[in-house]
Length: 215
Length: 394
Image (cartoon, rainbow over all chains, first blue to last red; front, side, top):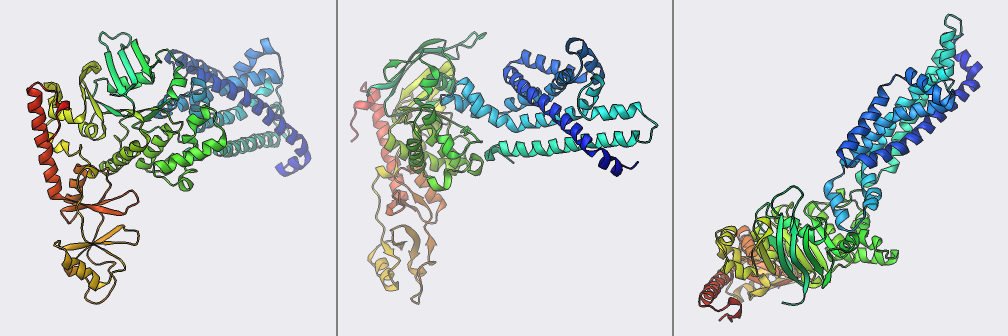
């Protein structure tokens, strides 16, 4: 069976999986962005918490995904929930690190003059530091998005949603006529999601960055 | 001395873990409407002292009074909105337009939009930037000098009684710096703010200050007086060393073009023909005349030989008159202009650029002589026990 035949045959079902896959990545990304930026904001000014946050999120990223999914079965069971938790853990490091780097890279003279004009701590953060660090933070989120699209596929081992299901099904039926084409189609679906997310974040980053600091 | 706008009482800062104070029990009064310059070698604590006033650094001892009220424990953010703040790096918010930068403090203070818009335009005009051209630009689209002007406009936005300026012209090329200093002095003559100005450059201190505080280590005041008195009567060897050589030349920074009598030069208008120019040349003892445009702005110097023999246009005869000075320029600026231009004279114009008169080299020389004499008299009077301030110059 050719890829074209497979797609015309299974296209609708495949599209459903693509949407499932994209949704679970998006949910995990939103949670990790909120969490990661918050952690970054809390730790960027103090040495010890900053190092601790980067080390812990760094360790998350080194756990093999199979192992992490397996470990999460006990507390969270099977399905989408443990997959989202695992994905959030994987996405944290790039977001926390880029938030810290972005905030620490803001020109001290700019922050000093904001303080000297009577802007309080939170207003300074919200109106000055975060907008100036934003391009760097967005890059972190974009990198995380790329990581998650791939790792989400492995989530199928604990019954997670998305294109991983088709890949594991194909692996289970290696040698049958449709196995290869099924795996290839699912992988292509993942690549398409990755591409769309990448371009989407590129545009989003441009649109949400002030014209005054765009290159 | 009028009512002190800022009074510092035993102001002290010691950083944790340090044995010595960074600022040691500083007493100082800063009079209303004056520019007080804090000057001293690097590491003397002048910037620390300035930042103690708006409490960007919290003092560990002593009191700060602003307009007679103790603000040592007041809400620091509210306090800072009443104190304009300009730093060397300017620190404009790069992601905001010029208008939004200037609107910062008025927005914090809850002004309505209409009032803020009017204030932005007023301030941009005040610092010499056309509002319609600059309002919507971003800081990166401006030159260093323009950014510094916006920095001053932003500091003035909510009309604070006090401004703190930390080496505001330090990062700007020398020619632009001179112009910005002169512009700022003209601005100050209109707005009459109380200004604390920090610099490490004694020449800038002499030029800008109504009063200068020369600071030693730990921000101890070596001398606090007018520039004239510091130049003529340094209080200690430290002050004398800090002023350095060439006190006579430094005095050139104290006299402004507006303070001396301007010479009048024969002028002709663009409508004058060849005969008119020649007549003007003959009627004067000077070897040249100054060609003015219809709004009396100087255009060119014309000598007898430059007048075209036919009745052609005068537009490109002679030499361009490009060395112009405002009334607020110092004699030092005037001398500079003369050395750079082709005549031993510099043209003085009003703020609109219209011709007022000419400063000649001999006038500068005479002013230097007079100032030197005054300084000698003042020093003699001081030696005789009379305070120089009481001596009426002859």
